[in-house]
Image 1 (cartoon, one colour):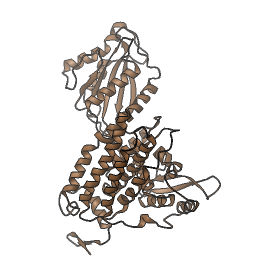
Image 2 (image 1 turned 120 degrees about the vertical axis):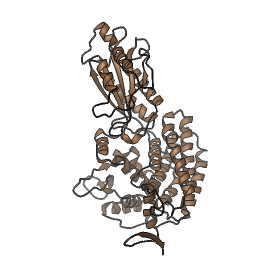
Image 3 (image 1 turned 90 degrees about the horizontal axis):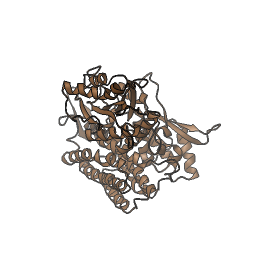
Image 4 (image 1 turned 30 degrees about the vertical axis):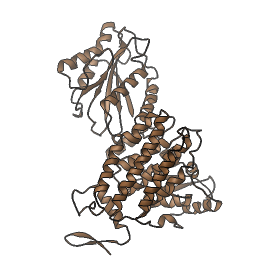
Length: 504
């Protein structure tokens, strides 16, 4: 969540602007979301011209009466906006957010007279960002001033809390348990280039999938390179015998410079030392990893090069069912075990998202990202337990590389059910610990999407989902076709006027 504060000298002018069309006609659906106890304005409906004028006058009233005239202007204007990929919050949720922000800064606080303020909602901005505006008077009803000293630091803390409470993208610079945030430059680039999501998010899922699906570091390097990104090691100073870190970047078009991210910039859990905590490696395994890191392509392909059979999907579903039963026996206070389970199940969702959703991240990618947030720990916290890891690790490998056939969607429907149970089980543990901030991210935002995905799998065969066989065409079906074409025994024949699929 991004907070931007400005000051001005006229509440009337600000309200006219907020209820007007905007500089680029971007203001739509203007309405009062909530307001302070001084205002008493009607909420969640369009206002008449007279009501809009009265609202502006109410913001100016205290300063008009007392002529306090704070430096910079008596009107405080806060905009709170979400990155385009964060979905939608309800007006009730925005109202809670607005109250939390103004109370933290001090416009309404026990022991002092209140100041007038109002929160105005619009539709999404031209770049797809949902947002609200808070207009407030820096002069209280008794003529005293609202102290906004260090209010920016206060708002940074509030935004960090809100990001966790509502499962939002963590913006760069936030402290505490969480993943590195997105800079404003990244958000602007994402909107400008019309990417589905910022590269940092995509790369984090790729790394998380490769790490969870791999048994050792050498396999991790091979899997990561095979999934598409550019990968480079960081060797210990003065030698080539020890790798102490890595960077990844998405491939770019001709002439474009790749943007590299170190593991720690993707997630605290994705630094190389932290990844190594989840692999069982001998001295020989570590040497083999250095060889893979140093090579431009795979040196000694391993199990990641072996295509699994279609029946492996059934094994994955059964494996997750067993894993969920084990999770239910773990005390909710055992944070290390729950974080370990969240980390590994995030890898499973990431693997499935890459195969099914491809370049159009959807509910599978959202689930992976939400679970990754659940898995984060603060500096100094114990390492997540590996006890829960063993139940998920083989499942991630199956999802990453098992073959498909026409019966696969029915098994995928069962797999969606089991993965949905995993989300709910981890969410229940958060509820039991009073960590309601993760519940929205893990269940509330994803349940409907996963249910829709289940129904789609349950009612269609793989062949019916392939574009060209039926309409409408969509990106998910196109990705499925590409997957099927890579399976043994499937061959595409192209003709001058049509194309069809045949089985050899």
